[in-house]
Length: 309
Ligand code: NDP
Ligand code: OXD
Image 1 (cartoon, rainbow, N blue to C red):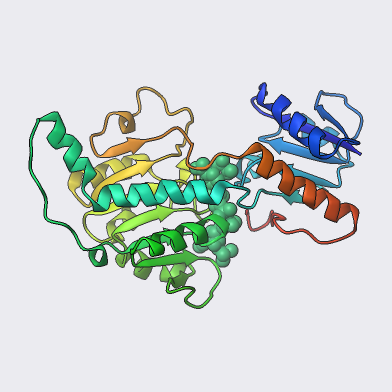
Image 2 (cartoon, helix red, strand yellow):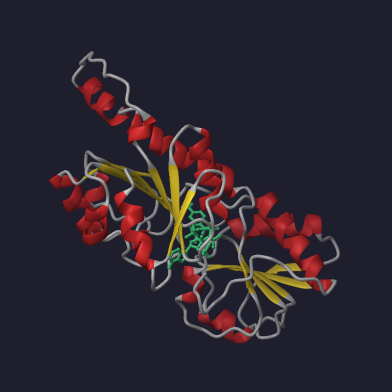
């Protein structure tokens, strides 16, 4: 069996992935893709080049080295094999830690305490009630569900928004579809975005939708930068409609040094680290799926390219 690994930008990281695959599949030939290579059986990719897709036409499956496939789909290339994404693979816990800390940061007023420290100001604040800080989770998939459940376990009232309808799950009220977005947003004081980036979800955090949130709402974006209209978010913060934001993802990454998010006192920036693909968990998941495919069994995580996720 031949497995080819292709990442853009290419980096020494690929060698580590290759080592992990070779450990779990010692009989497989696992290599870094080079233009003109012979056809492989499986590919492990991140942001592949057009040349790779047009050359590697005999793949049985292509595995995406992350949960989101927007970088791949934006190439607009038709592929004849299934595109399979990572499902949690150790990212759920990281994502949950990130979003829970951001929600607690806002709820406990730590932004204010940071400001007070700058001024050497000792001033206690009356405790807030979590009932006054309902959290809305945009996207109730693999990661959104984990985040919603953990926020709920921390005592927040949580509701979520998805595309397809389901009942309330573990006390989490579910909204679904475009028509329910307004009601979902109106009920939200802390918003966490865990949507895939698709034509339907791009720019979803725009002036209109930010304005539908409860006044003084807090925004956490751990999905993709293009979900947020940057200028609309900054204007909504400056105007007081939004209290602040914790942002992990950006339209342009690395976030340009001149971008106002870096210096805005109400915006916290992290460099796309909310949930990192873990070598061993990810490779174990991919290898298990390769074994199932080889045995003629179905696998989960196959991307519906028409739907965009
Ligand atoms: P899933 O595909 O499991 O879940 C996607 C969810 O979004 C589903 O609930 C889906 O609804 C919902 N959804 C999709 N389109 C719409 C729409 N038009 N309207 C309403 N709901 C919609 O994805 P994951 O949970 O695995 O990952 C989510 C995203 O997180 C990734 O796509 C990626 O962009 C981002 N991510 C970011 C990381 C980081 O480090 N910052 C790390 C990993 C992922 P339904 O349930 O009805 O299908
Ligand atoms: C992902 C990511 O999609 O790391 O997995 O952003």
